[in-house]
Amino acid sequence: HTHTHTHIQTHTHTHTHAGISNTALPVGKGANKMFMKWAYVTSQQFPNWGMVFKLTCRVSLSKEELAAYEAPFPSEAYKAATRVFPKMVPVTQSHASVEENKGALRRVFSRWTKPFLTLFGDRDPITRDAEKGWLKLVPGAKGQKHVKIKGGGHFIQEDRPDELVRRIIAFVNDNPLPAKLRANL
Image (cartoon, rainbow, N blue to C red):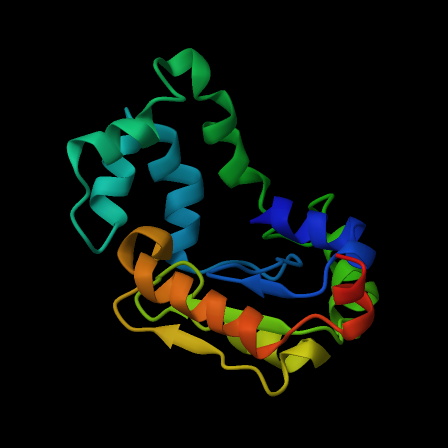
């Protein structure tokens, strides 16, 4: 998630639209119990990542799909980043990324007037209600067809892929490129 925010921040001039799903840009104000358990306990103990997806997706994944999530991590030696990354989320004011995230919210997202869509799952315990902050902050969010996708958990791309894609396509179609940009294609 953080990578997506950073990409939008550093490439604002190249984007005509932005859409986010089940994410936030933390600024050191804590986190819910579910996230804290994930970051400091669960993510440190899971023996394989296929199991994480098996337990957290709202739909059953095939053996092949689970194997695909496991493939990048054939042994513990490959899991260092997956153990560290959850702890890097800035949930306290003293975290080094808090000021960067506050700056991004102020400099980029509070000024984003291009089309901006939120598609969050109604069953995601980690980012529950986080879309409300985005809708309030981002000017480009006004007038868009934001949805809480029913039955969508944190890994909404697995839980409700067809609806997610359908809504992204509708967002792009509802917000065509300006004529000046279309002429340059």
